[in-house]
Length: 182
Picture 1: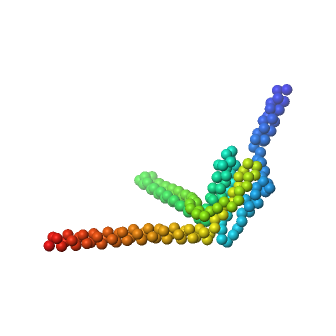
Picture 2: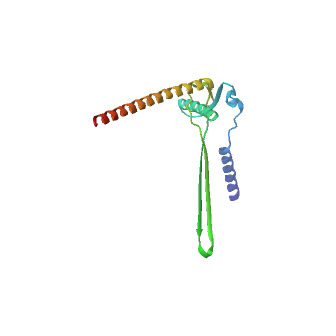
Picture 3: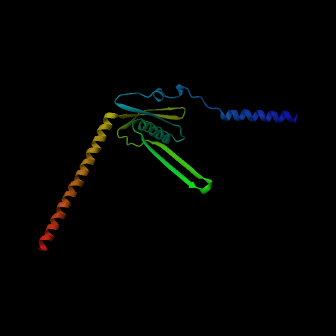
């Protein structure tokens, strides 16, 4: 009797654990078509994002941001590599030499980019999960980058002109001092 009760409790525990560990299968009908197969174009990048949150505004914002992040990883990735090399050698006299060598290598990929002109093209909500499709027009991006470069060039030109004017003024001031001391 005692063993039957223990066996029954064990079976119930195993069954309860198996229910808690089961994963919900997601079928392609549970997500928008464009989520699994984003559009491909020569003049644009597309990114998809999803978020399941209790707060609908936060879920929408998170899905939009994840779609933009997807584009960033396609467009530009900055790779930072750090390699640290440490070698040590100790002479123990008659006992010999002990050598140690440690090498640590870390590689990290970070997406960092300003997506000027990136637009959310589509949104969908399925079973409490928000989905977003973002588009980034390459031609518009190229124009925005050129515009920013022109503005920076103008700023640099203004600074250079101020520098040249200051140098000319300093030179004139030095000549006046030299003239007065004669």
